[in-house]
Image 1 (tube, one colour):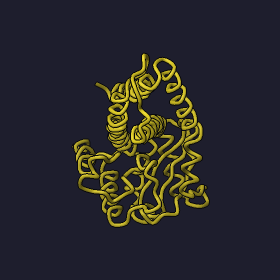
Image 2 (tube, rainbow, N blue to C red):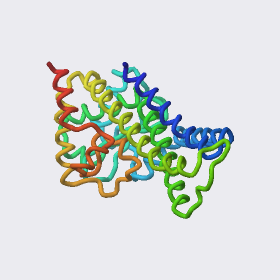
Image 3 (cartoon, rainbow, N blue to C red):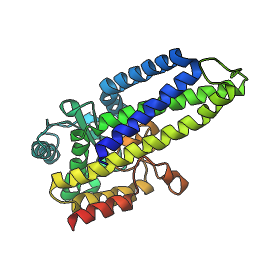
Image 4 (cartoon, rainbow, N blue to C red):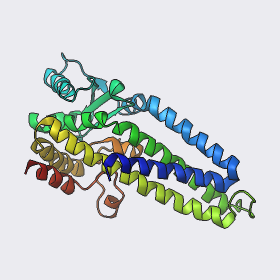
Length: 282
């Protein structure tokens, strides 16, 4: 099964969970309300996610005069990928990381932290930028944003249902919707299922961006070495100001969580990513 088909099926599963909750809450009317709720969330995320996240991290735009090498590297990679040149930003953060955002290749932006610029050599930085442009080319930003908004909606509804049950608000059976026990079961299980599906989508797209970025850069070695450096440094000095809702956007997880936390990471294990990249090298 191709990565694109797998992602489509996973997104359809998230939408189905929202519709299931809507039906359980109020039959066909509840199902319709849940559909429009998901639609509105998707539209807002589609149009405004880039502006919101760039403002959140106080990213500043970069011109050719500000950093000729960084600017020209992004421009050359974009030409190589046959895609519009994205807007370029630098984030005033010492923790090394990078992300891409925007609803499509014509309205995309790539942001790199000051820490990444100071830590990585030219080949490693090119690998990171190629990875981020691959996210744009593959429209991963849109896919991840939709997945995050759908999963977030499910978790919000699930939390509301659990609090309602706690205060005795999930009463008797309904001819159209589910009964109190059924709603409580959905309130507990739906957010867990949504989280698992969201993680599967995010990890799948990271692997795809790694492989596409390695081909775009011409070699996987720069990106592989960059991932190792970024991961090791981020574990020692995580992005304390990072928002968990945007963690899936970064090239490496911005937090230093390990152990059980790693099981619920939006990113595949660094070791596996590096292994796959080096297998491409032969």
